[in-house]
Length: 190
Image (tube, rainbow, N blue to C red; front, top):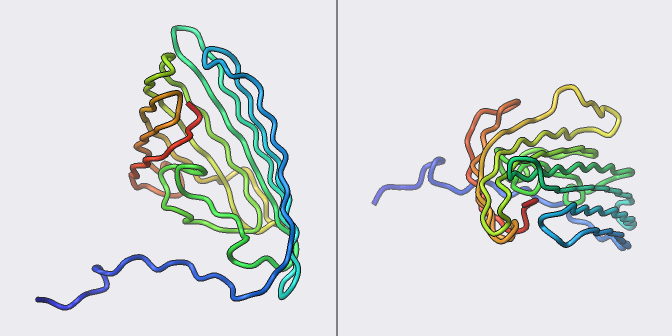
């Protein structure tokens, strides 16, 4: 039996700050539309305040919409963003990279005090089983350095079943990366 090498070990887990914090979190969500052949709009706003060994605040907002398109297709888009203030522990920073934020990049590959993200999809119109093409873009970094001109970006294709309940996507990091990633998840846009 040979010994373990660096290539044989699992990726290091990001360490969390060892702190005691008390706080409160709240969210407000709106949902409009239940017919997969009509307009469906969802939005969510969250806020969080923590105090103790570190004091911080976080706020996020997101909006998504899906609607049928001509030629038996359907389209969807989603946008979101967030910002933190104060002395933010590692575990309360924002992270980009995974199926829910930025497909084509590793889970939580990038982190920072502020972020924005957007995605767009075009899919076949049959809600029970769809094929889709998509693109995701996003930025993350220091709150004071917020920019829109050099985002991470990915493109890909996928399949969803039961109006997005089960989803499989193959994505390629197209800007600020170049690898392929397979994402299997639940609760997609379609």
